[in-house]
Image (cartoon, rainbow, N blue to C red):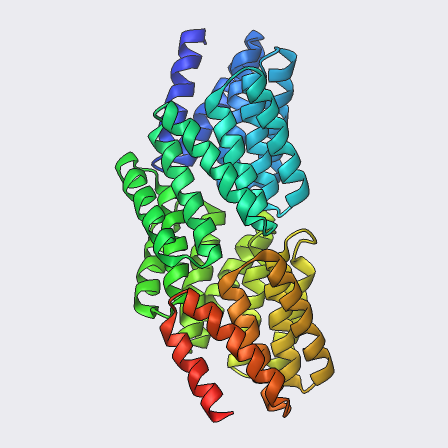
Length: 414
């Protein structure tokens, strides 16, 4: 095939991506890769490897995605193409994020940023900053996350990259959501949604829906949360995007859990569990397992709930304080149900330590609330009320007034 033919196939593969036609795009990329290697056209080979890695990552085929992206980075490096090398490393970083390998994720993102700065590639630099913001967010370094996102936004604005601007608005929404600034979070997410909708970016749009749904779930606006969970499932189901589909199923199950529809939640979570296991989605798996443990408690399957809670803790990354916090919190609830008060208290205190490090306003409120209830049940009234008041403060900040009312009722009856 001629270079012009290879160029056309590459362009067509890229055009398939926003509308989630991943298999068609991958077929074109395999053709480019085969013909480029036969003709010794290393630049086309590197470009095909890069795009192939990105699409395989979306489909959840993380091992082959990382292998392809790293191979692309190597070919670009041999050509002296630092821009291509940086873009390939960004795909590697995204795979590491999906695996919850947060330390290496940050390192590779920073390596890509250095390369992009060396050649003054503003788009790659902004993307590197956005990924660094994600790494900081996972580690609870919210000020650094917000700063990196703002720097990325300034670059994208200067080069008039509407998709990049929307991506940073999505990220700002996530930071403000973590801080508990609901109004600011929803405004940023709405702005991102409008742009992604116009661009036909289904994957990005589903990410917005899941974040908005999570906010409404935290506020206990269950109907609104359900609407956005269904939108996420509708966009990702059948698209081949395993990571986003598993997250959509998780949110819908969390809505069902809040409603007490435990059997439905369990079915959705088992489906999400299979996806995580088959595709190695270690960033999603701990949340799936800990939510499944809660649902199993709801139907009285205490022993399986205990085993599942332990699996959740085991799957949580050692450098992800959020997952370590939420999984230990569910472990505490299971131990409380079993009647092992000592182990439950230790798990509660461990969970709160991690959640304070993660700076997660809602999860901290949830942790203080459940720990307060536990302490009251043991007759430790003063300490229990102190925990409930901390929970109340978090929920007031989140404007989660239904949860505030529930806390007030518990305090009044203590």
